[in-house]
Structure formats: C-alpha cells, structure tokens
Image (cartoon, rainbow, N blue to C red):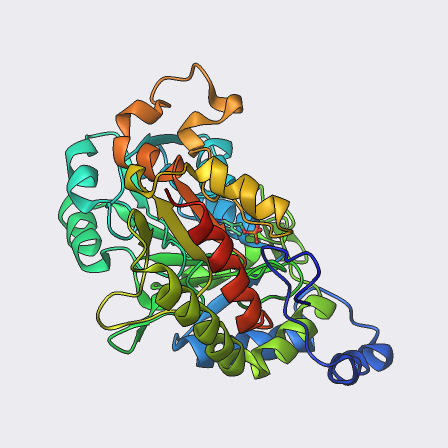
Length: 371
Ligand SMILES: *Cc1c(COP(=O)(O)O)cnc(C)c1O
C-alpha cells in the first residue's frame, strides 16, 4: 500500500466465508426484512456489547435520528451544535423544529454546556449534542441542565460506538442516543443505525414509526415512514461485531503513532482521549493553529500532491451551509470557537488496516509544511 494512494478511510469487512455462512439461512427462510432472525440476533448482540437493556435498529443513522425526534413529539427549538455532519441539523429542520446553535468547547470540540444554558428559553424542547471523533460530550453537565429545565436530551452518538467513560457505555447517556453503522464508521452494517433509549415503552413507538406507523394488521397509529434494517445488513453487523475488539485495538495503534509523531509539532493540536475515556479512535483530527505557519488548506493540498486523501471534517459548519443561507439563527459568527476549529481542522487517514509506515509518511508530509 505504501506507494499507492491513501484514502481517508477504508470500510472494515469480515472474511467473505464468514459472511456467506451468515446469510446462507436466508435462502431457506426467504425472510429478507421486517425484523427477521438476523435483525433480532443483532439487536441482542448489540444490547450486550453496548451494555443497554434495549435498542432499536434502523436502515441508517439519519432516519433513526428523525424517527426519535418524531416519536418524542417535539415542538419548538432544539439546542444543538453546528460542529457536526449535515445529518444532525438536517434532521432537526426536516422535522419542523428550529435549531439553535450553541458554540463548542475548544478542547474536544463538543457542545459547551455553559453556552447551552444561555440559549434556553420557553420555546426550547430538547438538546441534541454530538459526540465528536470518539470524544464524549460533557454528559454530566448536560444531564443536569436537561433535568433542571425539563428538556429531552438526545445524543448524536454516530462517532461514539464502543466508547466508554469510567466503564459506562456512551449508549447509556441522555433520553436517547443515535448510532450510525454506515460503511465508514468504526462498526458498520453497510448502511444502518440504532437508537438506545431510557424509557422501555419507547421501543414499541420507535418500531411503529419506522414501519409506516403500523401497530397491527388493522391499526395504523402514526404517519410513519419506512426505516427498517434488512437481513443482509443485520448479517454484516453480526460478522463485524465479532471482530470489533480487534478493530478498535488496531485503530488505537494507528492513532497512537499519529499522536506520538504530531503532538509536539508547534502549532499542531491533536485530540487525545480525556481521563477515564476509552475511545474508539473513530477519526484522527488535527487542528493547525497560526503558529504552525501553513494553513489547513495548504496542508490538505500538500497531502493530496503526495497521494494522501485527508478530509475537511467538519467543514463547513452546518450553520454556514448554502442551503441555510439567509435563515435567522444560521450565522457562524455566533459560534466563534466552532468557526475557528472548522477553518483549521483536517481528519487524516484512519482505519484498522492502515500501515504504521504509511502513518509515518503522512506525518512527514504534514511536518514538511511547517514554517
Ligand atoms: C455518519 C453520521 C450521521 C449519519 O449517519 P448515517 O448512518 O450515514 O445516516 C449523523 N451524524 C454524524 C455525526 C455522523 O458522523
């Protein structure tokens, strides 16, 4: 791989034989979707892995998030972060809610609880924070604020599969957490997602919302959509889950090599796990401060010239998207820390199979950009 192009990510796949064995029973049952055997097996396996009592699978993370917002019957304003993927903000807007953007913490790029508190008013119904790169939000402060103001707390945990803090799973925080199992995530089902939730009664509601609102053969209770995971995706999940420990351990080796090589370069900020947090090493983010002497865009181009694909992630901020231009409340100047980070951040290639020699080559290119 060392002489070829290095992509920013590479999907994890089980051995082909393992997947073939997993899907073979589908040729006997002819049961391909609608909560079949693989679906049920994957739900149980994930409940065990994530340490939760209950979980609902979805066709993807985005539909899962939209479904949670619908099933909670929210109205009004939702406090959230602009430092995220399009999905978070789009889900809020597409469900007829008004996003209110709070700035992020400068150290781990998650929503700043102090800014959240300032933005709450009588129209606020929920907080939608995002765990970023495998770092967790300030979950204690956010839980306290949500409880004090009677707000729902719904995490976008797309980056936090398998992350634990003091032994507690990321899936255990808030009223609900959405996970994405997209091909590029630490754990994938090709496309897929899940919701973990606190209230056991929420499962029935979610299952109806994701299946056209159907309660039983003669009763359609909600104006639901279709967001079910099929059996082939669930089978992929069952295979990938068997290898997840090794997957994260190999990512850790890659991350630690990057950090060792980059953490002492002047003007370079890396984002290492905080005390007590077991990361999943989902993304390798580097922020280039002015002191580095080269801009983020210069580093991005230099890497490209050397066959290394980095990603400007998250950039632009969602409150700076063309599709939202001119809407009130969408102004990156109101979230200056997020604007600063978004204009200086790159995520570097990160996947379990990435060779340490390739990490060294990438770090050499980065270091050669410094003034
Ligand atoms: C991947 C991702 C999503 C969307 O998940 P899909 O499964 O692709 O729909 C949402 N939020 C964040 C932060 C993500 O990284």
